[in-house]
Amino acid sequence: MNRRQALQSIALVSLGAALAGCKSGTSAGPGTGSKSGAPSSNSSGTVAPGPSGVLAVNAARMTPGPATRAGADLTEFGVRVLLKDAQIGATSNGSISPYSIYAALAMTDAGARGTTQAQLDKLLGGDQQRQAGNITAIDAAVAKAVAASKSGRGKPTVVRAANSLWPDKSLPVRHAYLEQLSSGYGAQLHVVDYKNDPAGATEQINDWVSERTNKLIPHLLGPGSVTAATRLELVNALYLKAAWQEAFGDPGKPSAFTTAAGTQVQVPYMEVETQMVTAHGTGWESVTIPYQGGGMAMTVVLPAKGTFAQIRSSLAHVLTTATSAKRARAVDLSMPAFSIDTSSQLAPTLQSLGVTQLFGSADLSGIAGKPGEIQVNSVVHQSVVKVDQHGTEAAAATAVGIQAGAVPQQLPERIMVDRAFFFVIHDTTTGAPLFLGQIADPT
Image (cartoon, rainbow, N blue to C red; front, side, top):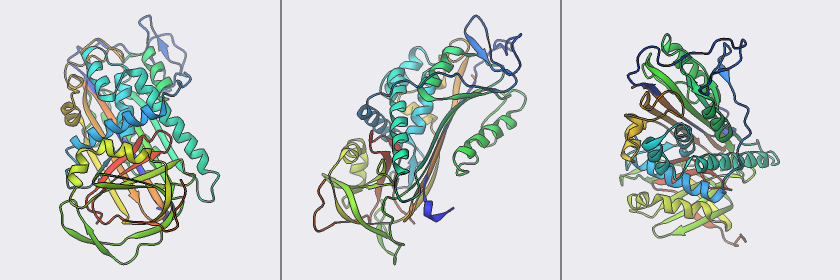
């Protein structure tokens, strides 16, 4: 990796669905009489791609929702998932991409009905119109931030977000559902053959994810995660690479760092002095470190000594306060570099948050088939975040699988991040978390 482009983050989510006890032949394949390479549809409003295997419904993106609402909804959602993720313990390192997970679940919700839809709506903070409006608002804010980064002296920020559906070639997906995904999420559909070649389908999805995450996540779906019973994967991939607006100096001599478990380790610190937004609350302080152009930033929340668990339990409120602060001042900041890679199976997490029917007698008839005919069997998520003196590189992916069944002051404020902390990577318009995590021990 080019170390001068080092802030890199990636997230991926895959949601897999499978056929739930249907008899052979209950899912109609592509219609007859269609032109080669063109999608076919029937009177029920379903559509199946032709031999090209890719179908994109050309619907214009919807009008973005309110920026502040998007930030609040995704922050609340992200913190709830982070705190329930079994892979991220109270005193361990870990990260997720709230944006990636939210987008994958919202795409699923667009085809949900009845109780399945109601449970997803509750977790995601509102109905489908609100969910799609949130994602569109964030996409617009990130696009603005990327454009602003091109006018600076350093390398511009790179953000790639992509949504896709991967149905089995026998699954007649409803045209109205595709239109919703196109306008709300800019998603495309890629047809694969789970029934006869699940390994080949897995490879196609993993290759798509790897390409869009700059190879930071080459194998989102492991062996056996896709089977002949799988009928649909909904995948969101997110990649970010951004240089700091003001680069840190090279890491110096190792000094003490207090972990979330209360032990001390020796880590090298990188240091920078520049204008940054800071905030303070009971038991915590924060600093927002801008990336090139100022439209994207990383906010670090540093709990006071002995309060890591307490701040963790109220993290949503703390993050909202920290990311909405506006007053900048001169800051002399020291913090360790870090690199984390977190893979999570989110089905148990979502069930603990009230989304239960999705994994049982789900009603996804807005996607295809009848109520109960397809259900979600997995939600796989991976987040990679690398931070050093030059910037950040991050990636995330989520797959949902459905199967059978202000004015600067003269003296700079000194902030020493020498104990366990939280971080969020966000745009500075909505404040919505693209990546969210905790560093309990940077070694």
